[in-house]
Length: 372
Image 1 (cartoon, helix red, strand yellow):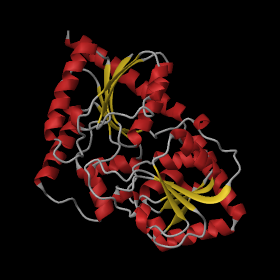
Image 2 (cartoon, rainbow, N blue to C red):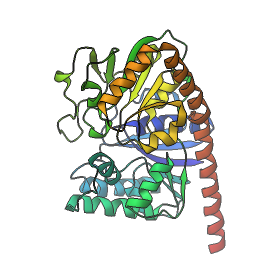
Image 3 (cartoon, rainbow, N blue to C red):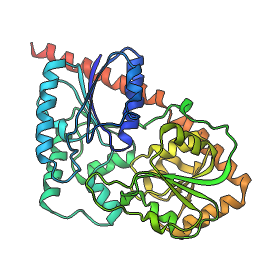
Image 4 (spheres, rainbow, N blue to C red):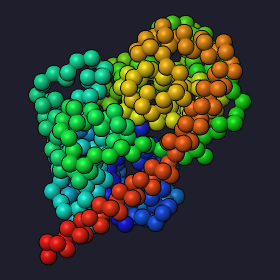
């Protein structure tokens, strides 16, 4: 089967794409992969060189959630239409909403990873305003959802957000994201340390919660300060108290090492439709300290310890409690590790998408025969 897939290089969608594309290519499928947002770094595409049957097309087209992206969305849609004619795939997998509206008889999968309107409601605590740009954005997303043969989401919570803020998809399904356990080290010696990974410029990641109280254990914050739209960071690195260290972005191997050595991981996000970093931490056998939001409750159940929603003091108290009770911390770490192995491995994710693709292609072929 030949799949044309789009992905952005700005956030966790690229990690998800790597796991899925690598698995599909290993199983003998052909992939045409188009990257958007900005050109990937050499580190981001190191994995691509090892894969046969992968045609990689990097672009710099802006993403639909970026300001003033209307011209780029129109241009990228035209680019994709020409590429579809050129490579003639069997199926289209879009990790952006806008392209679901492309006019083609090929099956179209649109994955709802996140969106601006549900982000606004979760982060701001109010409905998104009726601005000209958000009006355009809502229309682009709604048309893409309406044009998809199926909409996939990484959590039931996120699929419900699509239904609430836009329109019910013709067909919707949840496929949890997955990571390969072999990429992580759950057996290294642990230190009494907290790690948190997230974009400092993204208000939803709430990295500032870690900085509001002096930590009872060393804290390492990993992430980028650079906003794609050149807006200021939501977390002031210069104002971080003693005991908190900011590393900036780290390589994959460096992240593997810091997660392997940390005893705890702080998932601070106020908006997180899925969250791959907590999965990576769990596969590294870190105890998960999670913000008490519906998506984390859905995904992690009793395997995480929760702090009061968006409450920095409660976060600090929870870290202190686990830091002071090593055996309890180890129990939560083991629970998170087992939960991740049961629910968030890459292979079940790849299996689910492969079955979905095959069903859609068979359905499309049957429809074509009926029309003859």
